[in-house]
Each structure stands twice: as C-alpha cells, then as structure tokens.
Length: 166
Image (cartoon, rainbow, N blue to C red; front, side, top):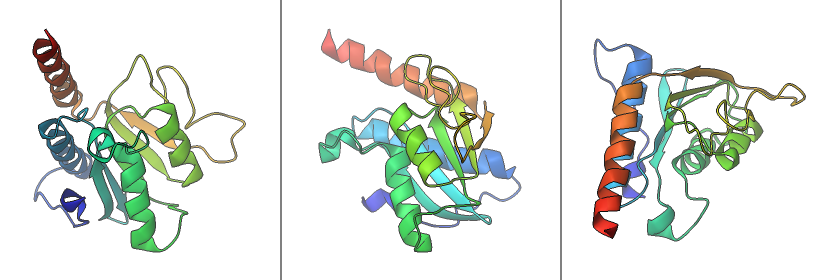
C-alpha cells in the first residue's frame, strides 16, 4: 500500500471540502491506473488526514479491500483507536453497504461523497445504512462535491473496460 501514506494534503486557497475530495479523486485515479474500480477515500480529523486509500480488491485478491475499509483501517492505526469519532470521510462514490456499515461501526462523524451509486449505494440511494434511525450512531451526509469529476472517472473506466472485453 505504498500509495496510502498519511499526510496533510494541502492545496492552498481551496475550500477544504473540495481539497479533500480532490485528494480522494487522486486516489481513485490511482485505482483506475491499477485496473481497479476507481474509488478513493480520505479520512480527516481536526484538519489532518489520518487515512487515505483506493480500491485494491483485484491487487490484494480481497473482496473487502475497498478504499473506505482500507482508509478506516489506516485511520484507526493513526489514532490508536477503532473509534474515529469526530472524523470525516471523503469518498468519490457513495459507499456500498459493507463500507457504510464499517463507517457506522467506526463512529465517523460525516460522510461526504461525490456521486451516488444507484445499484449498490449504502448511504442514500438503495440502503440508507449510515443514517438509519434505529441505529445508535448515524453519520451526517453531504453529497455532490466534485460530482461531475467523480462521475466522469467512473464512466470512462467502465467504458474502457467494456471496450477491452469486446
């Protein structure tokens, strides 16, 4: 996971939400370059990046190696606790149910994602896991940051994959 180093990721003069989503997009681009579904995640606590990752399912031959899971694991190691209270996660694509459940269990404060996943979305589109009313912990949700860029990256990846399979 050489590309997953934790750092401050500063882009001066840029809105923090856009800055962190831009870094998540960079992670997603790295995933695409490796033949992975282009999804990237960045976790921020008190203005400091404590986890960042991209999908590595094919690379690691692990169905749980989603960007969000890897970033959560990295963030927990960085703070020395599985409870990531007060931390926000920026993800290029709405998380799947597995990742959404992990976010709830990690007690993240807020989920910020770029584009919805109308087939497997675990936040708002299909399964509203992160804000499920009976749950003892719910995340705030913000969507649509750099939506066009996130959508374009996914569309181009799958367009190319279909061309390669033809």
